[in-house]
Image (cartoon, rainbow, N blue to C red):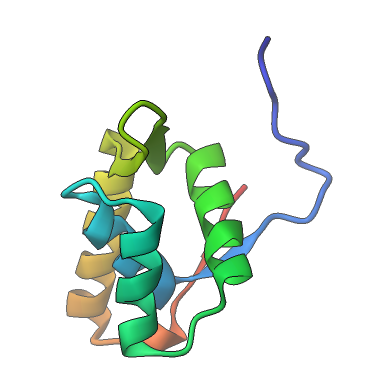
Length: 104
C-alpha cells in the first residue's frame, strides 16, 4: 500500500530547534524514554508534542523507528535536513528559535 500526502491539507510547521534536537539525538539511535529525558533537560517538553514531532519526522522519512530494538534512527533524508538547519544557522546567523520547517 502506498500513502500519498494530501497536499490540500495544511502542511505541518515544525520548530527547527526541536527538529534539530531530535535529529541530533537519533544519529546514535535513541529510545523514546531517552529522547523525552533529553528533551526535557533543555526545556519543559510535553510528551504529546514529542509524539507529534516524531510522527511527522517518521511520516516524511527524516527518521525511522526500528521496532525490534525500539529505537529511533536518523535516515539519509534526516541527515540532509540536519545539514540544512546547521547551514542556515551558520550562513544567516539566525537564531534557531526563529526558524520554522514547513513540510509539504
